[in-house]
Amino acid sequence: MRRLLAALGLAASAALAACAHQAAPGAPAEAAKLATAQAPASQAAAPQPVPERVRIPPLGPAPDLVLPPQQHFRLSNGLAVRLVEYRRLPIVALNLVVDAGGVHDPKEKPGLAGFTAAMLTEGTKRRSSTGISDEVGFLGASLGAGAGFDQASLSASGLSRHLDPLLDLFADVLLHPSFPAADFARVKDQRLVTLVQQRDQPGAIASRAFASTFWGPHPYGHWLLGTEEALAATTREDLARFHATWWRPGRAELVVVGDVSRAELQAKLERALHAWKGSPPPPAKPADHAAPATRTVLLEKSGAPQAFLILGMPGFERASPDYVPAEVAFQILGGGMASRLFRNLREEKGYTYGMYAHPEARKLGGASVLGGSVKADVTGKALVEVLRELQRMREEKPSDRELADAKASLVLSLPADFSTAGSIASKLAEEVIYGLPDDYWTRYVDEVEKVTGEDVQRIAAKYLDPARLLTVMVADPVSVKPQLAGLPLGEVEVRPAPAPSTAPRKPEAPAGGPKPPAAAPQR
Image (tube, rainbow, N blue to C red):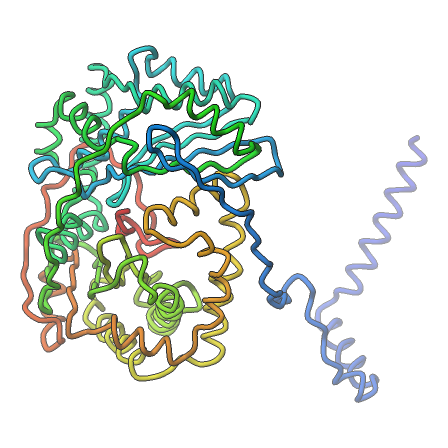
């Protein structure tokens, strides 16, 4: 053994000596010069192949999206049901869409719709909140409820062989929520903490101010979570009354996707939901929405190193025929890393991590929105570039490359939205909420491919109008307001921001990071 180790040691020493000799100063350079001088000219000029690991793969064709037909029927209580038989896995997903969203919030109790939905799974007359959670876990299922502006929803999914107990649980939380006092206090406190934390979040501050200023008295003009004052005044009786009024089958539809036949499903639903009856009152006519004149609201945040911006112009309803071409147009303007706003403000100027644009289209109207954070000391310069890009969208057709890239981004990401029973149910719920036809998603790819450069320019001229621009920013007015002088942003109003929070806060992502921060649209 010692002889073997000695031999290995000698071999290693020899190898190190050889390496040291080869690595003598100047030796590699001289060897390289000599090799280059001796190599044939054709060999020296031969291009080096691009390594496979850094080669960008070409975009493939858009995969075909073929959805099974939707089967429609009604239960004896009037509840509309649409079923897609999805036999890939033994799973069933349920998504109940109810006309009980934030548009029905009382003016003095904003946030009531969301609070009511959040409490559905917190206890019934037969089950406690922990009992519901344990039962969901035992079934290996999921169960949740929530509310946007245009709808409230109750969703569940589980194995098809567990459909009967899942429907029993689903029907219990839907029909018999008891809003237990202890759970009511806990959820109320959680929502209050969130509201207090949002006082420190520039995205939330700007979004709240934008909603109230842009929409005014319209039902979209309040914050879905409500206010601290309204939340403090909300009682269990308020939730029970809202549920009894609006959670009714007369204006609801159940979307079911999964491993179940129509005959089997209809029989099971009749047994589970036969006691759910009634219709909500007819919806009130929403207040007329007159877009505000060009103006700027600056919410004071002293010493802030960044300015959070939301710029909005009048938009359109989700069911509008302009929606698909607008998606292409907004993708070109600010839909991601290849968009004009990103290339200009991030890559060329270095003003921001990202500036986004999207059509915020809802059932009763919409807004054309841009948003992101910029360095405070270049806020004015950044706004000049944003306005320039808006004008360029209106005056110039996109290049063929821009148009192709925007379409590919929309089309190639679509199949992922239909990859599971639950995601299919969610996409079909959009058809329910916004009155879209059954073949909407089947035709979507073709509709995107039809969009032309002229369509994009038409959309920009119609919906990206700086003359109807509302700008809301959270920034240090001492630093930022002087930069706004001479810009076509209308009157600049400086408002105090909400009092800072003393509650623990969740860390925020870097401004303008991969997704827009708290300026994401309220659904």
